[in-house]
Image (cartoon, rainbow over all chains, first blue to last red; front, side, top):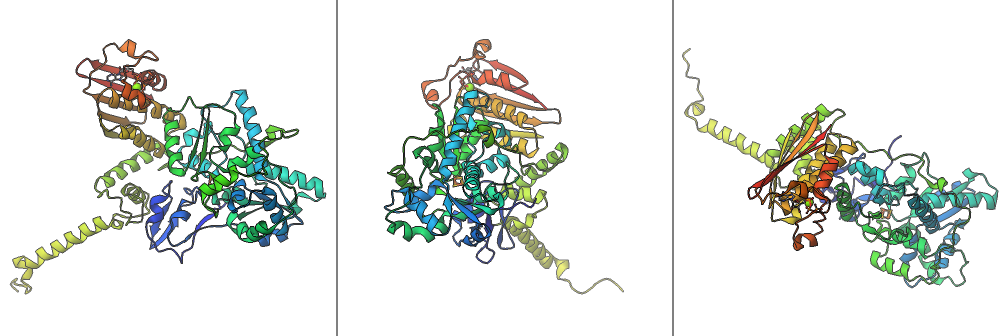
Length: 435
Length: 136
Ligand SMILES: Nc1ncnc2c1ncn2[C@@H]1O[C@H](COP(=O)(O)OP(=O)(O)OP(=O)(O)O)[C@@H](O)[C@H]1O
Ligand code: SF4
Ligand SMILES: [Mg+2]
């Protein structure tokens, strides 16, 4: 299957600077021929490059509102992060009603999906069969990060689907019951704070096909409903999720809903990597649950949101319409919400298929790296001297890509030319050999 | 393949760098997850001991197609009673070290548990050598 990525590059806007290559947590970007290039197998769609690019050349591919026309009945599924985007709006019903006014036939809150996942998680923890520390599976960027950089930790991940998929399953079931339509006539649209979720819909890792049909960014929806939300007076009473589910938009929300005592909530890709290293070293074996979210502050800090994440986080905490009590979900069958596939490690770190070849490559990398200036300047288009050495051994670059090596060569060449020029025989242009 | 690391006895923020670097190599070699885990845990514990008890030293790691052998050397105070040191919960860590989250007395027992072989050579007053072997 061709691997879809939401994060893409606009060639025209890219200046070929080195901002993104340095920021990428999986070293998935190189600058080649003056333009950035994303290495698909390594990209985890975290959106760090979207944030850092000063020329806005990195974008997230999402669906447009036109896609709604393809279906007889459409359901909007807002991520709870959407709720915190609007100034002076404390009633979720206004936001949900506005979604119906711009063309969706119905709404289903992803926060309810979070409540389902929370309930399933609690049950699963009770069984005591999970390896500690249990790592949350809610953030798809983190799942892909573990797959690429920490494959040995896959066994610690909670094998329950994301709140988005859980919500979509329920939304579809509800819509079929309500309308009597066939499943293919129902369009489920996720309103996404991030490219990682978009990728998880278009290229799911844990199931054959996502229950979600389309993904529209929080920012695009914001532009459409901002004015409606502000002027709406008598909203429909559509909100069903409680504070527990909505809190999943913020770092710590999921942790709280697991009802574990020893837990940590970690947000921001850099911190997430540090904690994964610690889990690998066996330092956190006494912790029951580890929530990991790639964005600073959690999904409120998603790259496709509009509002400042701190402000958004605070607004969500203060939403008056939210019921702090979660209503237990009736007839919940947890087994429906388990992963449909196992998470396979990505083989992108591996230098070769067999051990011997990988070993030889590693030795060559070391040798080349030993001769490098170790400035990690990025001028070669790789994020570090080490990464360039790897690229050279893998055949994607040459030593001449290093400007310091190149300069050394030019200087040597110049010196050779000079020596040639000034040597007594070199200046003697006439052939003095006897005829 | 041989890897050599210098372990600083004063820079606590660098503690764990050798194991972190070596872990990456194992992944690049495509070694299975359980091997990476065994090395990660045992090597990290040994590295931390070299920093906090041994006052720094060196680490030499060798990978062959049969095994991974990692040895840590320091010129620190040495271990007076190895059997005692091997006991779960035994620690001579100072309060400062405990504040950094070490000193549960679980390092050596964990090395024993995760490495396939653990050899300790130590002379009080002279130093300690810890050799971890993980079979492939
Ligand atoms: N390299 C070393 N040099 C001197 N003493 C050591 C060395 N390694 C271990 N020891 C002694 O053995 C004891 C037990 O070591 P162990 O690693 O099991 O526990 P710890 O380091 O004290 O605590 P933890 O590893 O749980 O943080 C140490 O407290 C120390 O007295
Ligand atoms: S933290 Fe939330 S918004 Fe950010 S990548 Fe993960 S799921 Fe997406
Ligand atoms: Mg120790």
